[in-house]
Image (cartoon, rainbow, N blue to C red):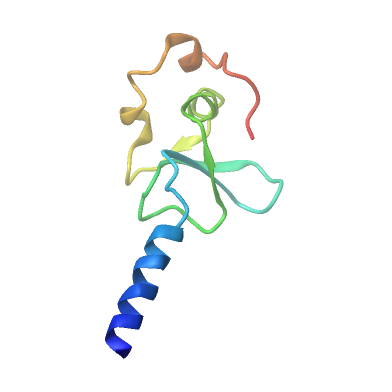
Length: 93
């Protein structure tokens, strides 16, 4: 009985888990400049990472935010529209 209940709770936890973001921007402190752009799920993304759109990630890279050296989001974003690679996708979050 206990094993069944634990399994049910485990499954509910998996179903309730928020969706993973495709791109992340990591900041030093709240409201400060961005430190890195990450691919979603990067093991090196810090606690201060926020999910962003692909366009926002491209804009951040175009503005000089460093790509994470571990997940290399700049390589993953190469197929993006050229206007975004040139920084024309709006302000950073």
